[in-house]
Image 1 (cartoon, rainbow, N blue to C red):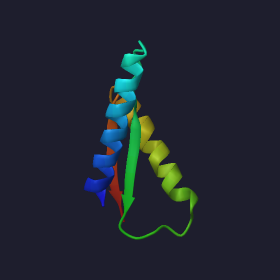
Image 2: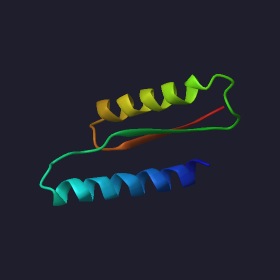
Image 3: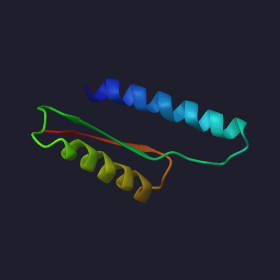
Length: 71
């Protein structure tokens, strides 16, 4: 579900930011996380939705995770 997906995404984000900082890099991470109430028929749909959400995160100020649940 969405809560589990966000826990994992935030852990990945935190560890990546920590690793970047330890290496001296000032890099952020923007990501999109989508969950579906029922599986989409087209396997490209989840990738497209995650991509859109990632760009939404970047437009909202970068270095964040945007999540959405889809029917």
